[in-house]
Image (cartoon, rainbow, N blue to C red; front, side, top):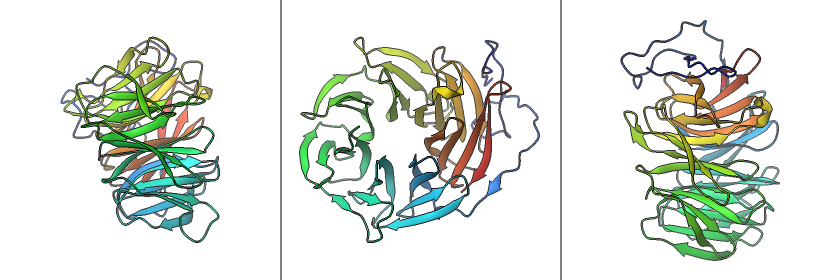
Length: 349
């Protein structure tokens, strides 16, 4: 039985917010709760949404299978700008101080400025296959990219020059994230490995123990002490997220198990939600889960029926998440911690 732990209590208790999905076990029992009205806005994309990121306190940016990058106001649902330039599906988006980056299956990375009307302000060509990882340095001067061509590249953002390039056999990059205030980049791979790169020489500084399944995503806590990675899987095998210590021990801390299909995204949530640190995951099983970082207990689960695989999560503010889906656009989720922890769908774009 799928079970979750409430926000302030140790007792295990399920808190599912919608009807059953085909990935749940046969003995799963669902709570009957009144349906919430979900605001339906004009879709930001015409197909699957592959990546989403918070741009400002009001604006978010997303990329999709329709080859476009879209900036919209998540509070009002209004699409502000639509950026066209890629020749194939957009795979990742990431932000910088005055704009954002997009990566694509067309093997390129582009930099965009929100108030620029004449196309991308910078191009970063050089990979031989689809670009699947983007990480911006804390000072917003350098960019790291990773690809299915087994390479990592470091770029000068202003000039577009490739400063360094490193290749590792079978290192099909799935995601990158930069450690705050450090020269290190975390990378996940289809070879089931999580690597720490020293961006100064673009060399591997550490490898965590190899996991059993492909690692799909990674994120780093704001204090730089921990990273979390998510795992491919099926029928409940694999499908976990793993917390790693980035300090001297650089060891595995715990796993978060409960999804039934590939866990595609994992993020640390702001500490404003409560005294207990929490993380969130989204999965191909149509579920978003929030977990107690210290105990590994599931605090709440929300199922987005009909959404298809949930590809990406982003934090808007201390109580709001965005979730990108393959079938039903972008979902705006609200976290309520007044009466225990609740996760509700508020709108779709």
